[in-house]
Structures are given as C-alpha cells and as structure tokens.
Length: 124
Image (cartoon, rainbow, N blue to C red; front, side, top):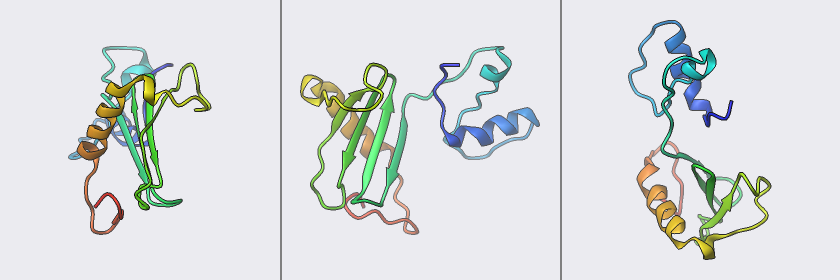
C-alpha cells in the first residue's frame, strides 16, 4: 500500500477492528486500506519532535518532508526534502520552495502541544 500512516494510527485501527471507540487521538484508522474497502481517510500532515541531539522537529506533507535540527540551541533552519525522489534526504531544496518552508514553520507551531511532563527547550 502507498497509504501514509504513523504509529499513532494503530490504536484507531485496532479499535475499528473490535468495534471500540477511541475518545481522543490524532490517529486515523487504516482499516479501509487493510480490507481494501471503502474510502481511506488521510492525514493532512504528520508531525514529530525529538528532544535529543539538540532537538529536532519534522513534518511530512504529502511527498515533502520538512525538518529542523538543533532547535534547542536556536541554530535551526527549515530544510525541505522530496522524500519520493530523494528518500535519503541528501538534497535540501528549501531555497527553491519558500512556500513549503513557510507552511512547515506554521505547522511546527500549530501541531505542537506543550506538555509540562515533556518540556522542549527552544519550543516551549
């Protein structure tokens, strides 16, 4: 399948299988893809953050991936990769796609949920 999903989609999928309700989740059930039936809902984007190695954030938007490294140190800039044509992320094309840089910057703020149990210096 070429359906794009993430680990947080597993719980809603299992819940769908056993006809259970999930109260709050960012996940989307991928049961339609597994069964090859019905319309499969898709994520507008996927967002990740990691506090290790200087802090990293990433967002996948369709064929594009935006990343920022060293967020905690404040030395970050958005890098853009086409993960279909450049799966090893060797060719940063941010300079050629300022619209994607702007969109990623907005998503980094919009997608982040501040959590006192998991502080992320540089983003909190």
